[in-house]
Amino acid sequence: MALLEVKNLGISFGGLRAVDEFSITIEKGQLYGLIGPNGAGKTTIFNMLTGVYKPTDGTIVLDGKNITGKSTAEINRAGIARTFQNIRLFKDMTVLDNVKVALHNH
Image (cartoon, rainbow, N blue to C red):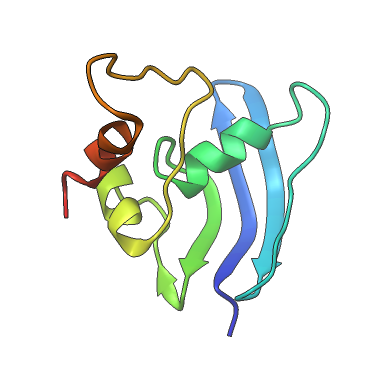
């Protein structure tokens, strides 16, 4: 069974189709990359996988459970999380404490 299976994922913003029919199957123990030019939809795909955006179409199945349209917190608890490019650290905290901030819901 695949660890992550994404089928026909898509999203539209108004009249703009940002991602159309994205599919991927990721097996346990494998390493994958997502590459493409600026504006290709890479960040939008990660935003849908992590619940930042709700997909217009398609399904996301993580370890046999459908997580499509779930909240970011629910998806984090299921095992998918992301960081943003503009990392803002708490300057008065250690590196380890900054990382542990994300564990507040455990």
